[in-house]
Image: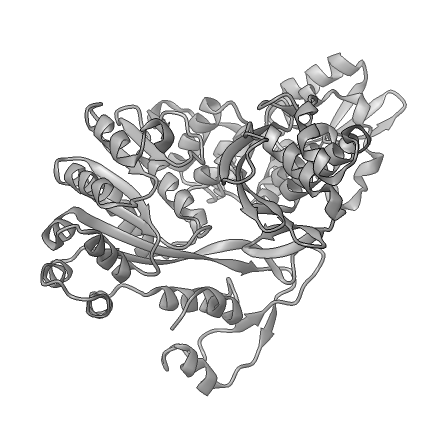
Length: 565
């Protein structure tokens, strides 16, 4: 298919400059066309070429001057000169208006249609300047999203109708009408702040005399607000209505979902959970980002040998891939990255989850609902009657689910699932403790991935530190590794959170080997299995974490926080 693409313009220049090979360039052209996005955006989003390098090459190729968006305050941009629809359609940002001349920022100089259409729409003479694609996307989002207006179009529930809050309001003996607007505004602001700060979870927590809101950013909780405690019932009621929950039920935990339409092309999903506590209901909201599953396997942080093992396991026609780790360790993203690789026209993929976190086109996703009799085992049985190729189970929680999943893996299906355990060795023990026979575990499990998420050091401000060699040896570094790397620690700047920005996965990837299968069938304990895994050459979580320290990706303190010796 790629052979039919004739490379020209920027794609040809990238190949000639040695930044892309011909196959990758052809594939990128096709993929960009299929996804209705610009060639430049596709390259940057998939990390094929750095945006700065791309901008300079495109500028030289097309003779267009480039511009640094950081040099200008976004408040001066003439927002009203181009409609949001036009700006997003052509990925163009209005920069400056002078008389009858409008300067716009673009990242793809080959799109002449953009200049022509904007010129026709505005009636002005339009001149384009080149900017980096990733900075352009952020600038457009910031320009066309007001402080609260972006959250008005919520799909689930009628958000303007808060009559049901009256029942909650009586608890504090105040009229709802007085506080309704401030509560709505406060909740909207919290949700928007969480999205902008890149938080993964929001915690609304009631206590006897206080009420606080915390965000989990890069795996660490930060206190963001302390609203008056008398508003806690109203805030909870507001969140429950948005998530289509039963507002009158306050004695049982509830689960719900919110879909926020940020703009015409972008929506954010929240998974909402309520829990009755001594002083009211605690509400935790998980932000679900569908784009995280489409980042590609290279963005997750696997070492080359680990990535190879995962891709090999995915290419097998049957067997089981298990991903383990605590809550919030990125298990779902790892699984969905694999599913995204398998998601082709000729493969039938079905998933059973509680709840579905990431929506992907081309995958049959089922929300399990135990109340209605649709649990994991029931969903699995139904899948096996639906001619599946790949089955994904959100979590193996009981013997029944485990047995059906193993049966499926032994009868020509690829099965992917998660378990809550600390390491790869403990995963095998956990299955055995559930009641799964050792020989079934040995013959069906192809790959186990245990993972944690560690915070990435900020590349702008990280600083080198000296640590005595004895201390490094105590931490687990080998004598051969000493002196070959620089140790970094966080400092903190305007671009990061206390010296960290983003997260990276730390993995223990273990494939089934004959020696491992042998000791599993001998009912070996977790310690013996772990020893065998090391003999087979698979790194432990700790060893993988130390490799990330050697690479300068994270700090030793952070690895110590998320892994153990």
